[in-house]
Length: 458
Image (cartoon, rainbow, N blue to C red; front, side, top):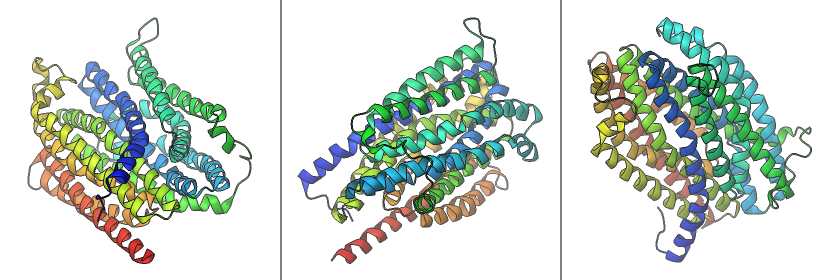
């Protein structure tokens, strides 16, 4: 499928790919560090806070992932226009992307404000819902800057200017972590706000990152020539529809994928507070690791999209092949490390010597082993999906997602957990099988599209 015999071209592709992938992956890891430190701080506040905070965090993750995914159509569209040298098209897509960000954020904020009722109906303990609801009622005010930042990030990345994204996100994350500590535990004269403090610090950081990236675009010598923030009052339905057509399936895909894991977390919550806390430890660990292939997938979308704009099928193949190899190799290395040192990983979150944590640790260990193995396939899957996005093939993967995750995956996880009595291990095995099936279908789809383009060009 991938022609890897032309070494100079491959070396060039690796170099250009890493110029985008390293900053984006670093930015994603930095952003996930907020969730990591949040989890550590929640664990120090008690198992009940860890359970409630983990529940609120996964809900916000699902909503945020869906909302930001809906504006991610800007990335392949701008990358294609950049590859084709169409400056006017780049300007219009970026501006309409900001329109779409606003249109997405407002209804999402309204929905988030009513999640507490849904959590009660889902069978979560009232005390857990009360704590989680407090967090969500505050964090929803950061939704617009999160979606707006995603739009601007997609724009500058597609123009091969990814490094500022890393700098801004690393700085914003550092501020967020410090703010979480100060407001969460009441340091330096501030009141002790607990989970509410973590949410307030996050909202401030999200607005700061959005404004910082906007200012960077306004002053950068090359980026300011695109005049992205001029004529924002002009609504262009045709361009907006292009963004919706490509981006909304990405948002639905991302939301369904994250929603799948949220359902798993709800089912885990029915097994008890210890099971939910163990699940949160493993999930947060995997989320941090997964940020690297996620950043790689963003870079893949850009590189494949740029080659698509040049109508170069061989370039598309090289970009996809380089991405898949790098992403899978990275996940194999990290997963091996997790398998070798599982107790040390859990010790980051909990005191291993505290007798009160014995039950949570015993539940978390087998889950971490299962999750580490599954992440190798997940890294492969994400790279392939990034290639499909670059080809602007988003509708078919969305439908595959509905079938695999919400049809097949949830059924397998439920049966293993409850009727077969495997508990949390059954849920994580079900997740792993789901990822494997999705990876197989996505690589089949990518091979099909590349073969079709080869035949068209021959």
